[in-house]
Length: 200
Image (tube, rainbow, N blue to C red; front, side, top):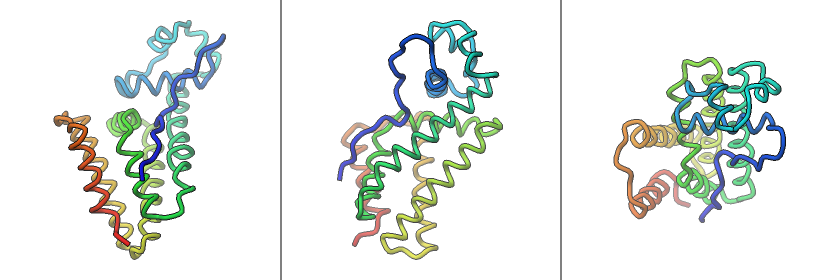
């Protein structure tokens, strides 16, 4: 089964008149993906958006408040859109394959996540990463239980899969391993599915 490709982080809406808080939050997410959490600052974002700093302070009292809003936007989108689109799939094996496919063919959300992992010492980042990681592991564990694994085996399989995901990000985004060609990557994803999703 091939899942429909979705944007991991919503694209910036068409601007008409005054910028919204969501416009600022999305711009902050874009900057995190490009330069990391430390790069999020009011003045460069205002320049990027073509507005004055006054527009920012209409919506947020501080840079940290903007960062929190950006992380909440990222977290909410993943929870509602990524996992939400999988719920209508009744067969747990097909649902897992769809999850593999969705995750494998996204880029920006992985980059944001990788940058957040590098900023775990920031007080706004750590709780978000904690919640997202817990939710992902719970979802995977429940899915593996539904395909027939015991509670313990399902938890171990979920941890193995999540560790493989984080490790792959580290290799590609932080250690700059040579990126696989398209056909090689598709074969790798298929191998992961065949290896980690129990057969009927």
